[in-house]
Length: 548
Image: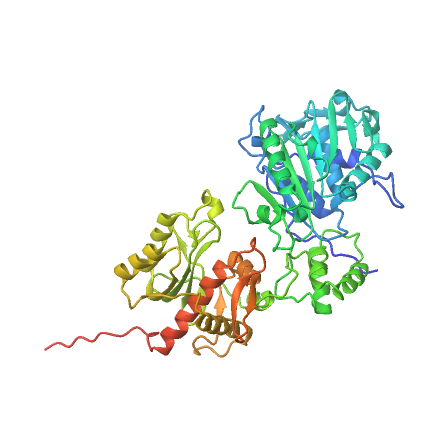
């Protein structure tokens, strides 16, 4: 049997955390089923890593703080099928129901947590080390397990019930088909899209399962938002678990992954994008990487399941077992080919470059991409905090911050030697006119992407230079590389070819939720470079001064 490899040295804990929680879990949550049902459970390396991160404590935490005592407000775990997400989620839920998960101060050394003091007669105790954060249980735990359907929520609730029945928690927890009573007043409720009446109640913890399937269509996005409001009022926190999602569906998982919030712990092991899931040898390497830390997994069995699903739905197999977020339909450009061109490097000030600009107002994104004269494309940074020149209107109250975009453009024009800017004017006619007036009509060109013939040719130019092999150094634009910007990579993957009767195509989104604006900006930047080279403007003209 081919086993998954052990977790590597990346699982290193160098921060304060409630170490008592994983110890409590292993003492109170037995193996829920199978040949080892009832035996002591030992967390897999990835499970332990996610647990200690979720309970990571801020060095500044003080007694009385609830959620603010922790480094992360919520967590997202994206892992492939069969890694044990469901049983692990059950252990976290039981810890939130009866374990020492609330920050209770810093230990001087020698303090002891005893289960007997908290209604559990198992006899377990834990002694703190000096400086270690201490924990205490919630006085009235109110918990919700949420999924799209009953069979989905049962992935967590079934092992949870078995852990209670087979272990010491049965003394003060009473499990039922739809909820579990904790002590006299605590509850663990199961909630699906057909049982929304339970929402809106104050809760201390929410376990949100398979959020890659939570969308506006099934009303579960509203569920996620409602739960977070309820948690905020109680000082509670939440956790998402999911497989890879389809980026065309704009799921809760996708929004969490793309959020700029820094107080979200994210665990999403991924193999290099250059490995092709359609290639059996590469697929084996992908599985070895994403199943690291799950040494119970038989990679031969995973390969057999994946290969069968690949026959009918390769994208689903790649999401479920490859842990990748891929759309179901074919894209304009193979994302693996794009990823293979990533060779990040520094671009110094005053470097000779071209720019591509694609703007929107309230729905789509706004982006500026740049490219050097030797074909290296990158997303420039601007401002005091070096923010990327890509703006999501959702991050600014629903509208792109025009003043910020103008300031960024001015900064780029002064930082680099910008030979040419290709800007798509719609929604930005006034700003583009300003740029023409300020920087000159020879540098700023109004480049309308709605022109089918020109846009088709520009898209084909970039696609060709990405797909073909790089030639020897010194051959301009034949050695296209880029910075590996994750947003641009996602937008390239989102782009689809919309064929026209003329045989030409334009770029479109696979769905309204998918954005392609950074991809369009990349097309414009690359087209600008090609035209600059063709016009003989790639080299800066030298000035000669003669003395009398």
